Image 1: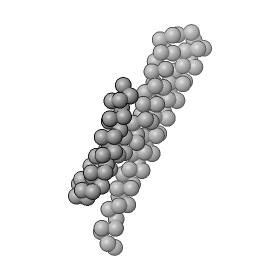
Image 2: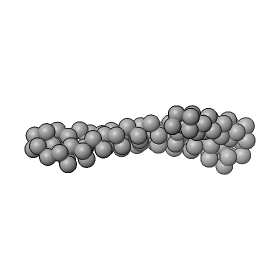
Image 3: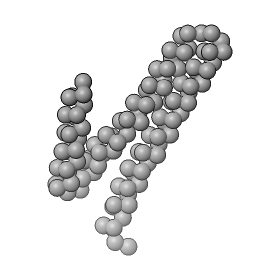
Length: 105
């Protein structure tokens, strides 16, 4: 087996794991927020409703950050592999995202 051919598979597995577990964590956080919000409605406890709403917002933030974290992870992987063209592309994508965030504020 060629050891060079297994590296892309390993990188793909790491990125897939990030997206899979990140989605799972975000979904659980949102589900917990929904459950807390529903319990607050039944028990008439406004503090619990605010906590539930905050958890839902945090879960959405996780979903939004996952693609950005993916690009940052790819930048590190490309830099580690000394693939400078793809490292520069990933850095450019992160810079464009950063400029977009700053202009959006």
